[in-house]
Image 1: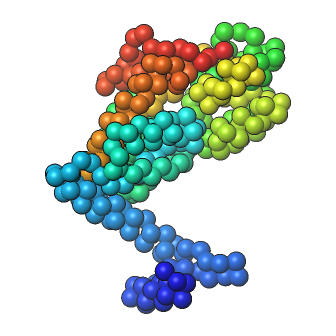
Image 2: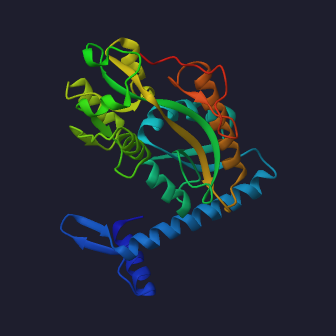
Image 3: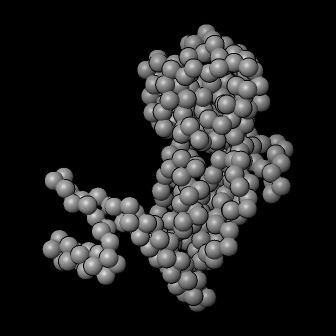
Length: 297
C-alpha cells in the first residue's frame, strides 16, 4: 500500500474510534498506548480467525497455514533451524513464524493470542496454560577452559558468592529467580559483574574474559566442543522447559501438528546429544532414564 493511502486509512480508523493510534514526530511514527492495546487485541482476533479457517480447510487437505511459535533467543538459536527444516519436510504447506523473547514475555504473548505455541522455562502457572513437560538441563558456570576456578566436576552453591559472575535474563525471569533462591539457601549475596538480557551477549563477555556466566551448557555447545569454554554444573540446580499453549483457546490442526513435531524434535536432539546435558521429562514431569549427558565439560 502506498504511504498516502496508508495514512488515509489510519486517519479514518482514528476518526472512527475517536482515539489517536499513532504519534507522529520528526523521526517517524510510534504507537500510542491506545494503539498498543488495539494492535494486541487485533493480532489475537486475526490469529483466532486464521486458526478457524485452517481448521476448516484441514478437514479436506493436509495441514496448512501459519503457526506462530515463541522461544527464548538461546532456544531459538539451538532449536529453530532444526525444527523449521523438519516441519518443511513433514508439513510443506505449513509456514512457521518464530518470535523470540524472555519467558515472562512469552507467557504474556500466549495469553494475548500473539503466540500459539511456545517453549517456556519452568516453573509456570498450569492454570493459565496447557503445559507438556519437555526436558530439564543443569544450570552451569560457563567460563574459559583455562580458568583454574572451574577445575572441578561440580561447583558448590556456596562458591557462587566468590565468583565474578555474568548473569543472563530479566530480573523476573526463571534463571534469576532460581539464583535468588540459591542465594537464600547459602546466606550469601551475589554481586554480578554484569547482567545481560541474552545468553548470546553473555557468551561474548565470557569469551572476552570479563568473567564466567550462569547458563545452561547448550548455549555454548560449539565453544565447549572446540575446547574454548567449559560448562560446570552448579550443585543440583536445573531448569525445566515446557511446551505451552493457551488454555481454553481452540487451535488449528496445523498448530496441533507443529506442537507434536516440536516434542519429536526435542526428543531427537536429546537422543543424539545435540541438546547438551538435557534429560527428557515424562508427562508427569519426572526425568526419564538413560538420557544423554553429552556436551558438559
